[in-house]
Amino acid sequence: MLLLNPMRKTDRKKMKRHAYTAAQWTWGLPQTLIGAALYAAHRKDEHFDYKGARATAWDRDEGISLGKFIFVPRRNGRSEEGRFLLEHEYGHSLQSLILGPFYLLAVGAPSMLWNRLPYFKGKRKRSGKSYYSAPFEKTANILADRVSKK
Image (cartoon, rainbow, N blue to C red):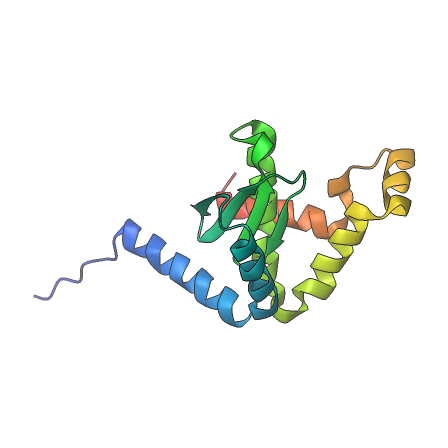
């Protein structure tokens, strides 16, 4: 009798990470190329793997996700806020998997404008809305939560 050995959990995890990487370097190529260039520019910063993504802890105050590459502030370290931002940026990398080459137009540009433009900063302040209330930010959190099985 032939017994089939089911794939071990570690093998499944490896396979998922390879699929994630392959998808980011094909379907998510535009943002992954930009992320790779930014990663190279910050090669001296601290880097670590996070669920298949390549994360960088840098000296800037904001996080950014470009395909397979995630950048988060070093100052937050392992704090709850730092963990939240890392998860949030990972959620954006999942949006990259879903939207592929449309990610930069559908999420990247709106997110950057929502974060940086004084008009939107003032609007959030006046209304009391969270930065994470925008649909593209909220969706990143939802995706990260689902993948993390929270």
